[in-house]
Length: 189
Image (spheres, rainbow, N blue to C red):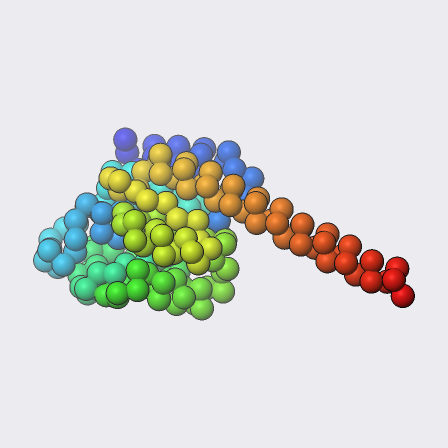
């Protein structure tokens, strides 16, 4: 399936949801491309997973910011590959550095740079430990098995929608209970 067909299908999927994330964050290795960059040379021409570029392009066209969170020990190679693929400028934040923190540092930096709350982010990664740690920060996080694809996109937007509607309901519940407590305090006086 070509990039334009994937992009069009991704746009259709996005159209099914009333609310989209403000920021979608992608891992690189085995999420956007099928290799570890530290095992590659800058001289090579990298390839993305077949549906990755169309999905990235659809988010761009929908006005949804995209970012990178990668624990690659070779950010120079990763950046070279992003430039060669012609997508480096698409990302509002690129946190590419080796870390033992399961990407929590990456997300703190992305949050500081973009001012987007964690609960308004969607994250795709191929490692359980990153998904678990980042989910605890309030980010909707999706484990990809064979790179980001339209199935993962649909799952991610569905989970984001569920998480966001449940957080709005819990916020409304807290507001109602605080109004009740303040109105009962007024009645007691």
